[in-house]
Image 1 (cartoon, rainbow, N blue to C red):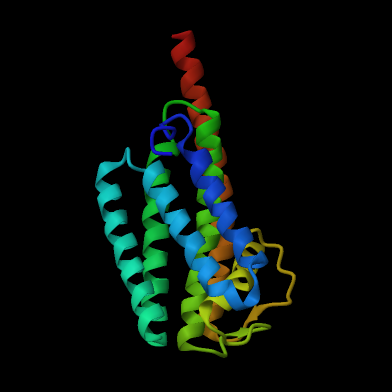
Image 2 (image 1 turned 90 degrees about the vertical axis):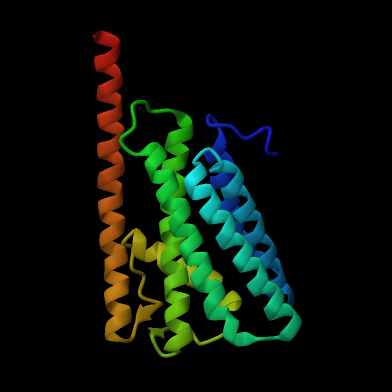
Length: 220
């Protein structure tokens, strides 16, 4: 897998792994959900690490986060230590943020536009939704009454539901079946909606700017 991934196709693999993570959380057998989700999170981490190994500075940082997350999973499974769930969520959030920042540096406002970079912009959007979903899960860990329409459960059992709510908010659909119930959760939710709107504007501006730069180089 490592030999097949290069700078011309790395975001295809990464985007595919993110989509598989989202699908797995909704289709996994309920009793095995935690194990299946852990497995697909590991697969996503591996895909991110292989896809972003060209960015050496962030690559080392992401490896450290992935190792810490695996240690937390082992502690949880061996000792049934539920309190470590918050640590696992925080590590996931940091990992996804580091991945987002690394991808953004590689594709936004660069000199050329390629199919791989367009797919990379999709990966950025998926990561935005995932990051906010993890933030909502963290809020639930500390405030079980923070959202209407979602009961407090182990985070793996709420992961798919929170991803649904996150992407509905990010795209400003707002179906209303899940909603914030506390002032702090309301702030986090509308910040995600604002981010979704600005993300689309930034991506369009980046693609237009890169296209103009290519045309100027060809004509120059």
